[in-house]
Length: 284
Image 1 (tube, rainbow, N blue to C red):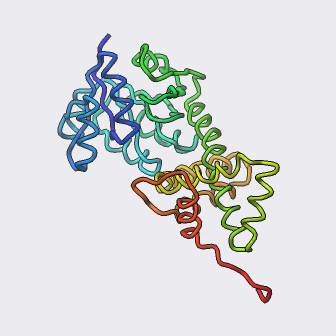
Image 2 (image 1 turned 180 degrees about the horizontal axis):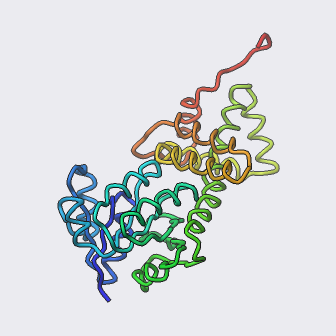
Image 3 (image 1 turned 60 degrees about the horizontal axis):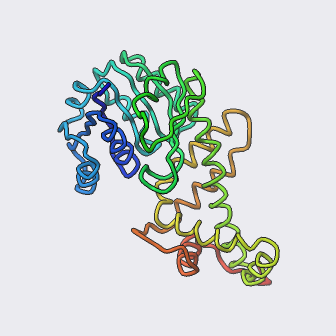
């Protein structure tokens, strides 16, 4: 059955998810008020209908999806004044943050479903996965039908989907940051060529991985700072050391912000230079 769905706010991922829902026959709304020209272009290309304001989107929608930067997840929930439908938070947030969002949403009279998106935006070679949890997760899953998005309902827990997302990104993005930090250390100590020679003998894939990590850091790393902080908070909340991902957040914070960059040695050089490791001498 066709449903009116609001998406707040359609960045690269949100617009692509919205396009998948449009392809399933749903009316998918967004609100252009205060948004950039780039966002307008993405929404139009995805076939989303402009509701104008967030208030109009809330009034017309029976389901609202939040796909925004992690630091904005709670604030977005607070802006949905008057919404009493079904709310999916699909942001990269810690379980504790998910509970905070849930509290805001349920106090306003809406129903909460937890979500975690893994993979690239729908439309690529690899199918995007959305993990869902919560008592009404099945209703959200049904909206995607046979779309390019693979939906997995895993639990009635209000935070299980966020926990999966935190664990997955802790590895993929956390280890990429660690690899860049290692290269920066080797360069500062003057042993980068020696390390690469050892990797070529025993772990050849790490050279290519360091190039790809640098590409991601340069083009998307600025968007991952908040996500690393949420992952660190997730570890801290269960009594585990959060330092790995606090450091990862700092790596991405220092990374350059490029529109595009190839996965090659030149991009690696640019990122390592931006990290700011200093060469040391015998007196140091």
